[in-house]
Length: 178
Length: 133
Image (tube, rainbow over the protein chains, first blue to last red):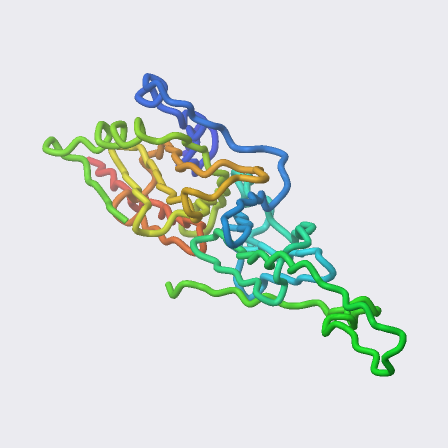
């Protein structure tokens, strides 16, 4: 005896397309669709009195695979998202989420205390704190009288010499316990 | 996570509607759906949503997810560069009767929701003996 079944034998979400329901359509709501074709991750930058904040939406990223570095005024965020890598492509009914490696770099304003950067990662949202450096005090330049033998210089005079190139700095990410 | 079961005394949909009306932005989260031996698995990107701020409802044959997001930055912060809006997430799905509704399970991990939709067990085919006279 032959059985006939139309369509897919196992299609529990076959009617997924009917997602937005009448009750939602009836409401006066601005429903925004999936934000397509944008860089992953999307970032926002905010300014506060004492610091800048950079936020990035990186859901599903393992904090252990997240790499934040600062080098010569360039903040680089690197990570990977592979939470469904074991699933063969033919098993997917929908594939809308980003996967794979990602990297983004942001130039920092020069008034940042690079040594004080810190970051938090909660519920897939990364927040990087970029504390502002104090504006340098106007520097008084001492005029040395040629007659005097002792040559004195301001304590900060060395800075005009070639500064040491800072090595890339790694930022530790604090994470809320789950 | 709250799981509201359908019943005459509560009307989760109208509650949800009231909550939604207060939201400034509501986004449709991107999802993945894949098949497994046991049924289907759904992943949804809900950055900023925790298990406490997620509502997952099954009513009749409809699965609705609603995730509220609290902005992670102080209100007085001035926006300098914007690539995304902070808002809530909403999406709903029609499930077929092949899903075992009573055994749907869900978890949140780093802003990703995972919903496991097990296949309902079908009865074994039974041979019907035919009596001959």
